[in-house]
Image 1 (cartoon, rainbow, N blue to C red):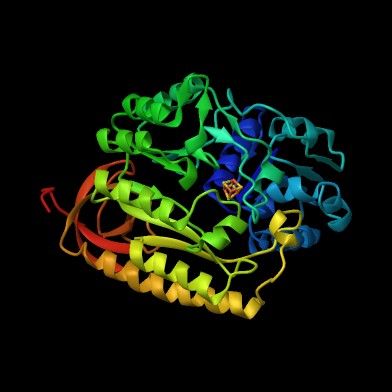
Image 2 (image 1 turned 90 degrees about the vertical axis):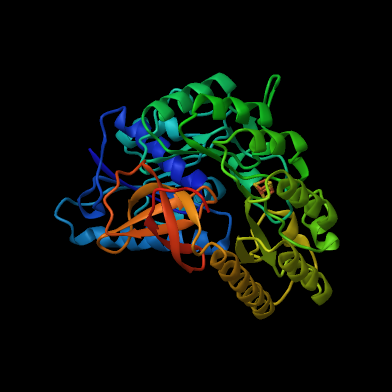
Length: 433
Ligand code: SF4
């Protein structure tokens, strides 16, 4: 049977799609790029923001309604991921063409559920991970490796602990053997994934210890990790990053709000001052580090003064890139019962303000790279013909024109143009900047 799979949302979901594909392919199913010819259509959904959930449910309706003209008849429709976990059975009532609803802990059951061809939802929480499954990787030369699943933090706006369950760290030796295989297969970039990687623990092994072992096991690959939580980021992780040359000088550290009052309502567990101390620690150890963050505008009770503190923090740190969102209610989370909800247009106005400010900062910071020579990893073709895409250690996209490097090669390029987070460059042999 042929299956088509599409993932929405974060890298964790993209990697879940690779795990699902690995499970299906080990049972004889084969993947196909065209959903029109597929026997099975799987969507891997994201519930973190209302917009992402609406998008995947819209796609489900569209694909569900679109099969009637097909010669091959109705495909088996499967919704996986966080939206499946969140809504379970009720989705089967709502979408008549949907056959299976499968939460993140039940992917191992997919081949059996597909063959049984019953309309059912499988959304139990189970201990464990997907050790032993060889993910069907879709993004060579970039690979993702899950080091932990779930989250215990219960930030008041976030649905993840409810749909992904409690925090569970994967065994250190299973992670390292996967890393060694990836490195031997020529993956140039390996990203360690978890909702809160800094709280990883397997027996005596903490996150910084794991990070060092990973770096030493894959000396020819760049190592990244997401996501970090400011309250759990300690000196040791920073020391390991600074001492191991193949750990990328890039750090994604969400701050969410610059106001201590809002951070408290968000249950984030740090103050703006403590956040800035973490940034100071990173920049002191690695002056050339590239920084990005996540911010929420319009959280319930956020006053103009609170919002101004977020603006001030964005201006003070001058992140190279930022993922900015307006607050989105997720039912069942603690923030939903907070008073003083901010009207939608005010959330949007605040978001626009942050976007304009960050765009200026990103353009200014990117502009500083003009004429610099950077090492990039060739990732594959770019959108336009005769262009190749690549990434710097700082995760900036660099487009090369009229080049023909193999994906997975490391190349030195001179930056000739910058357009926000996207840059253009030309190959160059010398790495002095
Ligand atoms: S740390 Fe907070 S925001 Fe991140 S997944 Fe856990 S609860 Fe959600």
